[in-house]
Structure formats: structure tokens, C-alpha cells
Length: 274
Image (cartoon, rainbow, N blue to C red; front, side, top):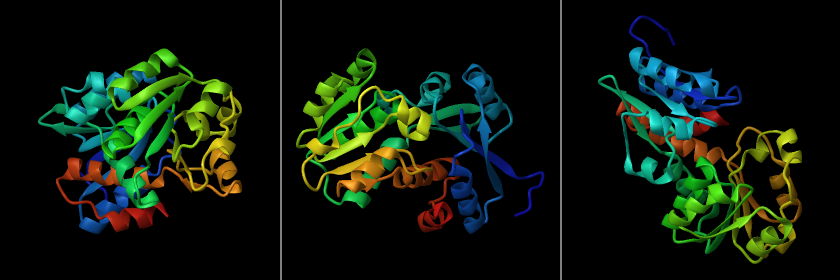
């Protein structure tokens, strides 16, 4: 791949972002389709995010993906956003169109497709852990599949708006509330940042009582760059598990199409992830 004066640039903006597999997926897709573009990961601190996004427009980027902790800030900074992003309250894909920033949310699509592939049948009863942008995308995706959704979050007040997105109950993160929510459910989705590192896992205020799940239940995390303690514990109990790789690949494919106008080479992107 030769980078020259006509090469377009795309990126993922996050903090931290060095673990991101997005560059591998998008660059493999560019090569497969002969697109003169390059995709990079850029670490942007929250205080610099608005300036970074303005620079994306000024420099004529194809667009950017946005990850933790910038998805809500991206929603506020875009000139226009699609209906899904407005509903979820988070933008994870920004496309530059005639100097304007158009925001979309491909996380809902990516999460829903990953569930369909990974689990087959839609869960009847699901619990989502967390209250951030990832949790909101998971709740909307599960509601679209017809699941009954409960939310458990450390910040109960922050989680309450999820009642309007498809959740029927929001509970605080306590041992009692966790046990009550998880008892007999089909799927638990960890949409918190806890799985990002061992230190974050150690800071979880109350353990997740996997022993109350029904036989055959599934445990999912949106983390894809490491095997989390939660998934390891679920496997030890004979539960089905799913990491965030499927969601990453499907949301990346949708973002690729938004940025390039071309159908994403999904199998090429899967191979690049592996």
C-alpha cells in the first residue's frame, strides 16, 4: 500500500485507544477494494476532543469512529445526527460531508447482528450492566429483538433514561439487586468498562452472581481485546459466552460503508480481526 498526496485518511478517536483493532479491519478492507485511504488510531484526551473533531472536518478526513469516552461529546459536536444516534444519545461514526460532520450510531446494528450470529435465537430475558453509551446501544438492540430488558448500574440516576429505550426496570449495583435481576435470565451483557483491564475488574463494587443464571444462559461482554474475568468465570460454570469481536466487526462494516459508499468486505474484515 502506497500513501501519497491523494490518500484519504480515516481514524478512530478514543482515550485510551492503543488496543483498538479498527485500523486493521478498515485498512484490510481498503486494500481488498483498492481504495486509496489509510485508517489510524488517534489518542485524544476529553479536553481536546472538540478541537480534534473540528480538525477532522478541516483536513477533509473520510470520517472517524469514536470510542470511549467520546461518544456523547460526538453527538453534541456533530452538525447532524441520524435517528438511532439521537435515540441512543451517542455517536460512534462521524462522516465528513461537504465540510459538515454527520454523526451515526452503528453500535446498535453491530450488537444486534453479533447476537444473531453468536446466540442464534433472541434472548427472552436479558440484563444489561452499565449506563453509558455502550449500555444504551445494547438496550436498544435487545429491545429491537423483542427481549425483556433490565438494567443494573452503579449510577442509578444516569441509568434511568434507559427506561425510555426499552428497559422495563433499572436497579442499583448492589449484591441483592444483582441477584434479583440475574435470577433465571437468558443473557447478561456487561456493557461497563470493567473488562478493559484487571485493575478495572478489581474495582467492581459487587461481584456478578453467575450462579443464579438458568442453565444454558449466555454471558456477553463488549470488550474484544482481552479475555475478561467475567467470561472466564462464565465458561467455568458451563455457560455460553460471547466477547465483543462480533459487535466490533459488524459496526465497523457499517461505518466503512457510511464513509466510503462501498459495501464492506465482511469476510476480509473478519480475517483481519483474527
